Image 1 (cartoon, rainbow, N blue to C red):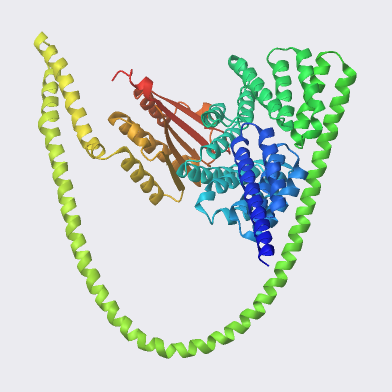
Image 2: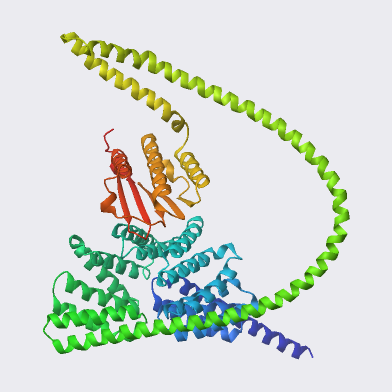
Length: 629
């Protein structure tokens, strides 16, 4: 008997020891995957696949959920969407069994991204909303929440709804800044840059360059691809001849990284835009054709028909320039066919949406009818309750009447004290006015009387002329001092942040416009010296006045940021916009520009009729050191 017990003990020890070894191996491979996803995708995929295979042997559902997600995510990065979805579904099933909200949130987000890339936006939004439900339950999943908000904003971009897109981007930025999620913040800045890519070069470059800096600082090599691509495309879109060399360098960097990471979509885009570069910038149609034909060989890996349309157009143009009219005609035909196909797809989509809306409305009517029947029954029950409550309310009314009289008495006392306080304020203001009036009468008034007497003389002595010159200077100085004492004393007592917050609150309170103030970091306004504080305050007063009077806006967003020695202030509204050429000489704009010049800053306005207005103010601390006061 003892012999058998000993054998069982030895066998159990071996099995348990083997499980421990396998768990250690899974952990090791999983660690390799986590550390290489952004730098060496092949190494990351090899490690997570081994971890997944070992997890199947141990049947550990915790590891199965994590490793299945990892395999699915790597295949998503490889753009193998069908394979990715199989593993993601497997990860979701394991995660639901063990209530792993983290894996559920991440897997659903990636599935949403897959459907978004396929232009199936409705399905994508369903997955994104489900992902947020899980990630908002845990603070540690704030990164996933911000990524999902970013993805939802990207969908609104495809629907040409920039207002909602900006709203979701800024929601994502709040979370990213609060939790210092620099990788996610980099992607959101990049998306905002794309938003301005066709309308405002300065805004587009501002956001994409910030995105690039964050990606480089955090060694996110894979994420650098689309940043370099976007910078190159911005210079090409705006025909920036002076920076065509920058366009070329950034596109080449993007293409090299795309081949390194084996990303077909970015290989396609990199070759497409380099082909456009050589055609537009260098007029080298042979080299342009080489890149465009390479992109054509990758077209099956690209799901965005707009890019395919652009490729056919460029190929047709290049072949025409090379006098290859047969191929020029061929690709012009393909371009026209694809345009028609896109148009037909849009029409079918609209018909489907109309039918869906009709079905929903019919179903809603049936539901409303059922609700109406339920409400009738509820009304009968309520009458019974109301009759019972009337008697109770009669007794309560007596108590309320007594309390009401007492409250009126207290309110009267409060009003009397408020009147007394207001009388004191008015008295104080009268004293201040009297003081200023006395200064004007005794000082400025007397001097003006003397000037008048001198000027009425038939002849002027040199002494009179000297007195007029020095007296005029003194008078100007005195008036300036009175004016400054009148307006700046309050401003000097408060910090820039206090002044701006009060100004925003006042604007919000006095208008129906919704205003949002975003500050990062919290001490960003500490960057301003006393003079800059006053000018920025006055500038914002002028901008708010213009928005209220002219913009017809519903929403205003103010973003204040400080990075190293650079302070930026961005004011965006969704109003009716204006033609910059027609208003650039307006008094308000001129005043703002003059103030910015006084404090050594730069001032940019982007406005198009119907698309709102964006104002960017930047102060460079390094340049400010050399500013002459």
